[in-house]
Length: 106
Image (cartoon, rainbow, N blue to C red; front, side):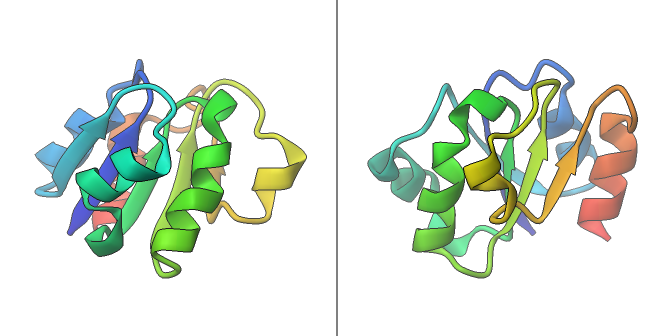
């Protein structure tokens, strides 16, 4: 399984995914299309966004890979325009990174 984690990842979901055996590519900040392509979004199984301010990246990820599962794991609320494109929106205060990683990798 391959995942791309975009954003600061303050709650260390990327590390939790790696512990579960997931191949993780990290992308800093709000990734534009070329950066997502370079990170391998077309072959990724999961796109994790850790900063809701970067919600525009969701539509880019879905445009490049319609089968990618989009997970927003952020403290902030997701803008309305992106809610319909995200498969899961999780508040880190409600579910630990370890629990999310375990579910995503199974």
